[in-house]
Amino acid sequence: MLAAHAPDPDGPVKEMAGIASGAQPWILDSSDQLALVRRLERDLPAIEDAGCEVGIGVATGGEHKHLWGTDL
Image 1 (cartoon, rainbow, N blue to C red):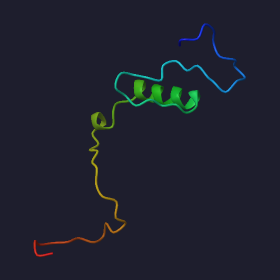
Image 2 (image 1 turned 180 degrees about the vertical axis):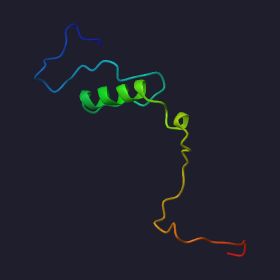
Image 3 (image 1 turned 90 degrees about the horizontal axis):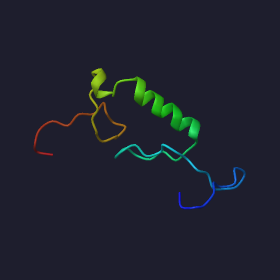
């Protein structure tokens, strides 16, 4: 922080420590939510390390439909 003193606790500017963790995304919401996220990251394995496969797909709402063949 470049200011000579901390912001007024009742003012619109808040000082937050520990929001940046390397290349991880910054969470700028409430500090209690940030504390929970950081605790879960510390205490639990990553989803992939727990045996789950994470993938990115297209959300169509029509997952029950399947297209077969190359002549579409």
